[in-house]
Length: 82
Image (cartoon, rainbow, N blue to C red):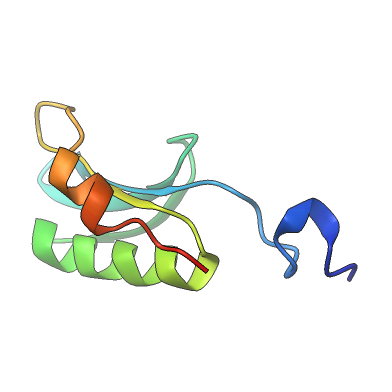
């Protein structure tokens, strides 16, 4: 693969990871909201997994609250750089 393709280097799709409530569970989804990555029984577990996925992909991790507002503190805390 071309390491310079789209600036990502590993052929991975760009897009932040979002931790969102889904029914009685919490899910990690790609930014488009349609592709489920993984789900968990608790917000804390899903957030931990989402943070690690974002770190590995070099993207942001954004935690949403049940009322659909993103946790502003989570945006700053979970910003992953290089």
